Length: 111
Image (cartoon, rainbow, N blue to C red; front, side, top):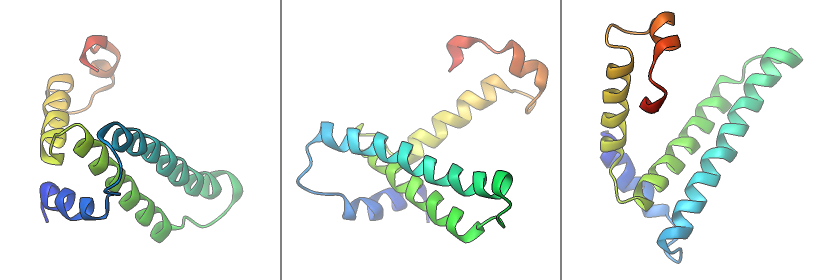
């Protein structure tokens, strides 16, 4: 499945009564909420002695993907464009792959 196929299929479950700005708000809030659920799973593993609940974490990653697709949809951009733009930014930031030095010296305007 391509990112754009995922976006198209996932957005069949988008609430059709939402206006564009509400889709954007819901998408960004959903990303934050789902990221919080993901970190809670990791926190329980690292700080509370739980086994890492890998399956639950994978499900939360899926929820994050859904909200990412919703946010991209609100911006009228494809997931593929978002992902390609991120790779361009990473290649510019770390042309030879990650290095601590590049991380420390990177241009703050390159966010």
